[in-house]
Image (cartoon, rainbow, N blue to C red; front, side):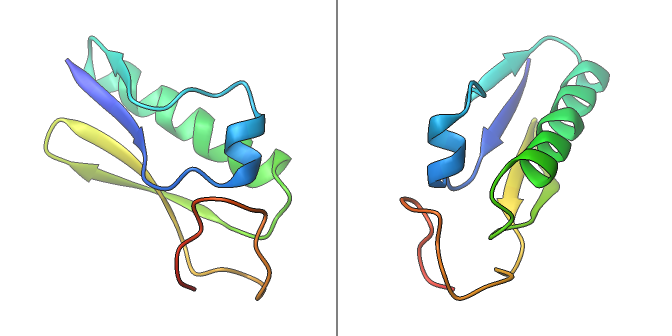
Length: 80
């Protein structure tokens, strides 16, 4: 099993229909789903964060890149 993990859930993620900690049977399927989630987050969210994919053992982690603004869309942003 492979897991898709969103490292920090920003406000836009919490409002979306996307789910965190999703388990997928195959690595290829997990990677495809992770890339689709990342693209949705980058294209459809407020734009205050950009997201990247990192592979960590049997997980694909969607992490925030450096913030593009000083603001925050709420919740889970941590330090900039």
